[in-house]
Image (cartoon, rainbow, N blue to C red; front, side, top):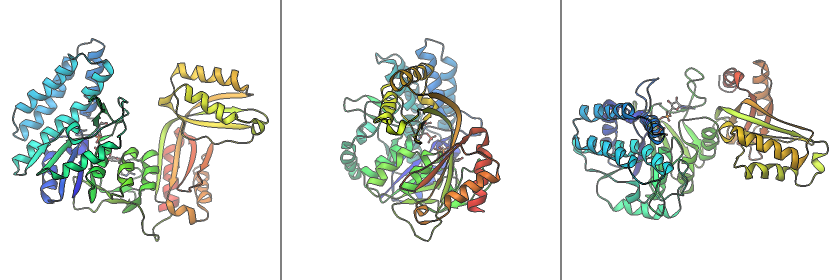
Length: 448
Ligand SMILES: Nc1ncnc2c1ncn2[C@@H]1O[C@H](COP(=O)(O)OP(=O)(O)O)[C@@H](O)[C@H]1O
Ligand SMILES: N[C@@H](CC(=O)OP(=O)(O)O)C(=O)O
């Protein structure tokens, strides 16, 4: 039994949805289908989820949202008419949007419900299309399926009781089509996962129904060793471990959500990344353990949008609890951190920019000055992180040397290095304007 997830690019228009139909029809093991909202049809297109967020922002500020609503309905109307589906689906979508807007819910709850309508509508459309091609398919809402989540709008996490409930779905006849990206709290409130979270739903369903395989269909033939938008025709990866994929996804490989690995990993369900536009291609397998012969570095991931909070104080190493108190200030201000490399008299804390507001920044700086009395304190923006990843690095000599040589050859100064004791990855902090050059140079060093 397989769980198949189709991303936004795979359900962006009628043509793509027909490909989805063929893929599902092609293999009778594909029983559970999870879908995203229609994504981009071309480079500068706008995803339905983004249109819904724009609509919700306008409506909740009491601004006119009619144009946005028309734009959304036109997208769905084009899909349903090209697929010859009943107009009832369209009426249903419009009614969902309008009834959410006029409900008594809080603004946060409304925003989350509106965001989820893209996936919900997509699942209704895909199940109707599967029926028209002769398959016994039915739409099942995540509440009915048993996806129970924490009460964190836009950032929900699955609760363990979901898995046993989902297991019962195996008994259902035919193909089950479930919308991705959201679940329900114990109290029945809808909550969305973080952006890109339909991958998470797919993994939860795969873990719950104890699937033999979780196939994640997207728009590339495989995971590549670097983001294919940064290097032309990079090498393909045939196999990765969960640990490697987690590091790579977290560090910038947008092809699979990093939070989607845990449910599949815990139940050892293999994941296969495949291409809706070329389903014959074998794709990339993500497994617990892989062939020892493979390369020691499997990928180079990168991301921008980081800041460095730098604090220095003479004899910091002797001041008991300095690091704890510094991190506690961040915790109390609601800021999570990514890395914290330190020296004897200084400490850097790498923070994602989206964690900092102007107000939080002022509070943090003032509190550190008052409570820790440092000599220097600064927040430096514009950092990028590059991650060299591979489980085989543990037994290999010279990876750091080879990496630093790649930076040196590109004349890039490394601002920070962090290697965890697990040795699955080495992180390099550089200025963001040098990122492209750095990734190309590392690719050249390790893969060409
Ligand atoms: N290392 C990588 N390997 C493959 N694709 C990558 C990688 N890094 C980033 N991507 C990007 O991820 C995209 C697929 O993810 P996404 O846009 O979320 O797809 P979907 O619409 O299926 O959810 C690819 O088109 C590619 O540009
Ligand atoms: N539609 C949601 C969830 C998702 O997973 O989308 P996609 O498969 O297009 O990345 C988003 O845009 O965040």
